[in-house]
Length: 428
Ligand code: SF4
Image 1: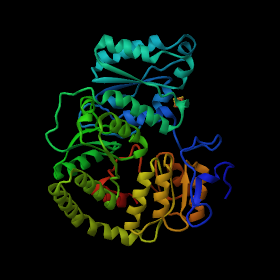
Image 2: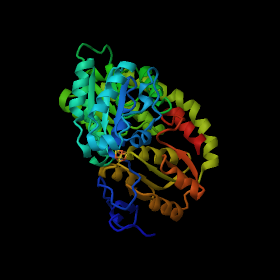
Image 3: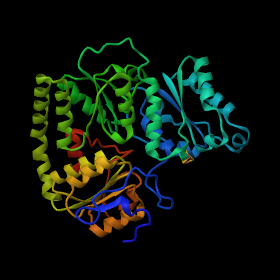
Image 4: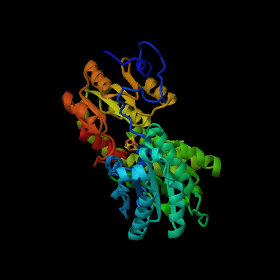
């Protein structure tokens, strides 16, 4: 199979050729990477803060591209889903867009009374040089709310750079309320986006164990909860690609330790509960966790068996944003008899890929920052029966006539937790 020159080092086949994969590189020009821009990365992370105003300073296309980008559900306010934009046109590109930004921001704050506002700077704003920070400061002062500039011009880097920009913005909000003392052992959840209500499933598990969640910063988020997130004893981080920067920042500033977990598949979901109980060194919490896992598995395992009978021997291709999810999926699929023959991610690092390589069977193709051409070729080469990916992988699967399971963005099925494992089988 032909691979573009310069991409070879980001692909390996377990058991053949080089042992290590190159990763965390800028996408190669001409490769048509599946990755999105820095603005998109920042938008993904901050979008689920449901009582904040999110204003995209740029052309309408940037807003349309990221409109409701995560199906992050809210149990209350829905302002986050409205995708406001200053809709910059030729006039503002020539004469500047600050006046339009000021007008839009003032109008929206008066109309919606958000708890805070985020203003995203897009490519053209970086080029024309609007002073977004100054406008945010001015409006924030006039309206008496925090208005955060998110300097996420798309050309600033990849989606992963956008994650970092969003984390730096969140870091300015965390710690702004000190008048709070947690009454129970408490954690923050970082990197769960409450897709299809997954955070609600997880919060129920932790509540049954006796753990409080102060804030889920990236799902069903609230400004006031994030302000006091620095009072938690532990940060539990999923989708480490998006939130590790904030977890490390909070460790440095507030000495809050963090742990990386995954909520996908039985093994990793259970370990995410046990790890938290181990952290708090609580026998009672561990007993509660074990009881919860026992209860869930008692119902789940017989139900999975019927799917295993049908799915045994099928081959899967996986291409997702974060490598931690890919690792969990390989394990979850193995449990129901499916072999992973292609697996890759947009943002994995060397440690993630080592874990993946150790986990996968001989002959599995592992790929970093892939493109549609490569993915189509790998699927045909390995004879995969189904593809697990996101919105940009869907056309590949459809065109090649494969079964497709959407594990990203706008999906409506919860795939995390024990009920998520069953839903995954239903999708396959
Ligand atoms: S690359 Fe630039 S113009 Fe395109 S969506 Fe991202 S911010 Fe907007």
